[in-house]
Every structure is written in structure tokens, then in C-alpha cells.
Image 1: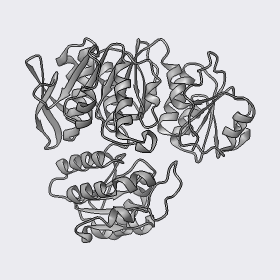
Image 2 (image 1 turned 90 degrees about the horizontal axis):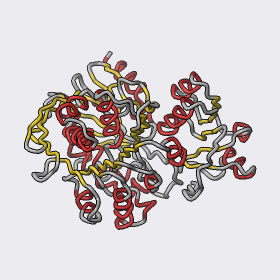
Image 3 (image 1 turned 135 degrees about the vertical axis):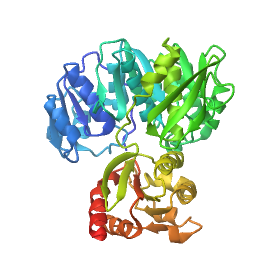
Image 4 (image 1 turned 180 degrees about the vertical axis):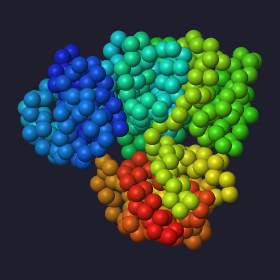
Length: 466
């Protein structure tokens, strides 16, 4: 993988931008914003997709496959940390003196002169960002935003607004969230992850402390998450902190959480109770909503109006997203790729499945993460799902580690009859069809391309049901 150089100054004149991997959820959103701002944009990806088609409609030149010729004429190259140094477009830029910006640097360029609200945390970022954007729009604001997933019902992950506020999902995985000139920070949690980049828990925590202390206005942070509490204790005395969560001393306290269907809860601020029912399920979404409302309160909005606006959030793609029903079995997809996220996604499914069962299809992500967290994944999946199919690992930006496959997760079950390791996707889909019965939920889990197995699962369910 290439190592982004965050010391590179963002050119005042970016000229024509070429995005390597333009179809990614984050990259496509940034490219969309530059197109809306009037820039000439081109990009490439490994395969065509609806995201590429959407960008072409806006005027982007897109190419399928990576080739040095794609970058000819570009003034600035935009890349991600997942790029290999042998990429021909990257090599062309280096050999021809074209500035190379990490996507976070390109995003920072978009936020110049804006009042930036940056959302960070090991999980919950995309949903919380979507809730904030939905809330601001419902309150009559016109924010710019870049999210890691498509926000329903807007149908986009990014858009340019006319107001001063800019809301973005900030990535802590490689430290790039420290680049931004942040006015307001929302920290959903500080669950340990990305130690392949940071090297130690202390360094991971230190990055979040720096992110919080750089904010110009205030930090909204979980009152419940152990990691969040750990770093809050390290903040300097002049850092303005608004906390949210179930803790009795939270600035914005959420309680009486009911998860039978879409989640209902009470939110208390300055002694006044407000009740809301969200359009999305799950205990964790009550906490995500509380975080979004806390930011809105800090920005000066009325608590009741802020909560009502946030409650209209309709979800984001790849977050407990229903893809189809076959033979009475509902098939969902979720981006969860960390044990805490997997637990939240499957618990939300459990809240609404009724008498049905939960069948998880997990695609582990990254060899290093799978090796480090195999036991935690197995414990959560065995405890919350009724049955699990584990696929092979999505390598993403990593080289294989000898002996590390999805089987190191499946081998950790106490009851091996409730788990099945299967590297072949068609065989996995066929196996799910033999296990599932009407009323069950099948949930694919992972931030790789596991969602692509869903058509195979639906077809196998139909064939088995017949």
C-alpha cells in the first residue's frame, strides 16, 4: 500500500482532478462534490457500477480498469490508502510530477471557509452523519455533506449546500481525521481498531485526543463507551465537552429505550424530557440519534425540534439494508466489520425478526484484523446469531498472512453445529438455503464485497423453496 503524505500542501489551483478508485463510497462522494463545484473530474475503478454511472451523468470521465493513459491530462491525482504503489496511474503521476493527494486532503480542500462538523469513531459514523444531515435539513438548514454511505431518502452520499455548515464523516483509520479545520467534533465511540496503523492503544487514544482538542467550538462525545471515557479524561481543561448516552450525568441523556420494532426512547436535556420514535431499529441507533441531537443543541437549535428532525432519518445503504425476500426469508446486508458493529447489527435484526431466526453470512475484512479479533467475532456471532456461514477474508489493502483464513473465525465456536466455513460463494449460498426457513432473516456482514453474494442467496432460496 502507498503511505499517504499528509504534509503535502493542497494546491490552490487543483485543475483537473483524477480519482483512482472513483467508484468507492467515499471517493465517489468527494468526486461528486468537485463536479458540483465546477471542476473537471475523471476517474477509474476496477469495474463499472451505479456510482460510476451517476458520476458520468454529472460530467465525469470514467474508465473501467487502471491504466496510465487514464491519468494523462490530470493536474491532481486523488488516491486512497488502499492503493498499491504499482498502480499505473499512480506511477504516471509520480513520474510526471503531478501532485498526489490522499482523498482526505481533497476533502479538506472542499471544506475551506466552511463551519466544519466532523464525525469520528470506530463505528456509527455513517449513520450519525446521516442523522445530522437529515436533522439539519429538517431544521431548514442547507449543509454541504460528505458521508461514507448513501443517505435515504436523498439517494446520495454527498451534496453541496448553500449554508455555512459542512458535515463530513472523518476517517480515523489512517490518522487523516487530524487534517481538518474542525469547528465541531462528534465522537461516537473509541473502540480499539486500526492498530495496524497506530501500533499501540496509547497512540490510537492520542490521535482522538488531538482530534478533540483541535476543535474550535465543542466536542460531543459518548458518555458510555469505555474508550470515549478514557480519552475524555485526557482532554485539556479548555475543551468544551457535551456528552450523550445512558449515563446519569450525560449532558444529553437517553433512557427508556424500547427496541420492539423501530426504536423508541426518551431524551432528557436540562431536566426536560422529549420522546421520539426513529424510522430505523436498534438500541445503538437511539445512541446515534442522541449524538446527533447533542451536536444540534450545541449549534444552538431547540432540543425538541432537533430530535423531531433527526427522527426522520431513513437509514443509509449497507446499514441493515433489505435486499429481497425469497421463500419467506428476508435477506439483509450490513457494513459491520468489527465485533461491536456485528453485535449492534444482529441485535437490531433480533429486535424485529419476531419468531424467526438470524442467519449471518460473515466476510472477515483484512488478514490483520481477522487474526487479532477472530475470537471476538466468534463470540459475538455465536451469541447473537442462530447460525453463521463464514466466508474467506476480503484482503482489501493487505497481502495474505499464511494460515489466516475465515476458518480461524469458524473454528472458535463452542457449538460447531451452528457455524459453517465455506470459501466458495455458490456453495455458501446453497448451504444457507438448506438452513433457512420462512420467517428467518439472512444478514450479510462485512465492509468488502459480501453484498454481491445476495443474488446467489436469493436464487438458492427460491430454488430450494420450490
